[in-house]
Length: 293
Ligand code: FAD
Image (cartoon, rainbow, N blue to C red):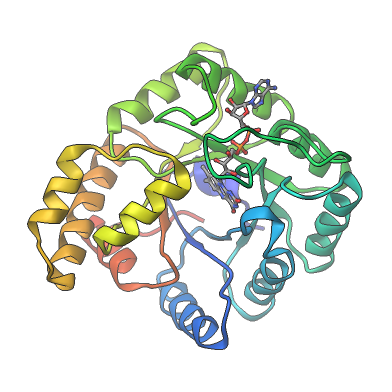
């Protein structure tokens, strides 16, 4: 039996990838082509995101279920508290369970107004991811992961608070964390040190996004509220209007980050694919590693 904590504890790095639930038949075909290409490389696990405002509830369940049923991949389903009552959250967790999904990434989700806006919980819902961790753990034998923020969560006063929150999520039953995408290795190492200093041994997987266009980076930055260092945007912009050149620079930046993180002992890498395989496969090939299982 494979599990995400086992993959993260293995001597080889865990290599995992992230998809989002497609909106159209055409986008779904692209996703499945990507899934099949990545399946051949045997990632440690694959995750499927949950749309803003709970908007992709059914699609997230459907895509994750299909991955569980029709592929050899180990799926991880994201779930957020946004717009859901406790009753609805219990029912989504039940739907994942019925679909054979045992790995959940328990998230609060962003405020409907976007990152950094004021968070308002559903009147019968939950306020923090920590409570969703506890809820899912109480409902069945789920392996639960959580989000971590090397560059500080947009609503958080400081990095110590972020580390305290991560520890609370671990104490509620989270067995691993995946970070927001970032470009500064030192920020990741500082977060890991803060958690270790609090006496917790939580594996923290760096989330990396091989940027394939300057527009995509701008959009992801807006959606996540995360800063991008000038050095990164400069390198991408220097590639000019040639999409192929931009993609190459994006792959190069991600490969450098990944190599340094693995050398520093990161338990693995979580690669954001945007439902396309070439950049992710290129980074993986550059690293020359097989993924832990
Ligand atoms: P929390 O841990 O609840 O933290 C939210 C804020 O509240 C933070 O500022 C934190 O410091 C503060 N806080 C938490 N607990 C306490 C407490 N007990 N007391 C005081 N303050 C507290 N969003 C989606 O909509 N769908 C996705 O699929 C998705 N996937 C993601 C995957 C990863 C790997 C990451 C890193 C993020 C993802 N997000 C996703 C975005 C995420 O939902 C947002 O960043 C959200 O704003 C924070 O979620 P969280 O689970 O960290 O919340």
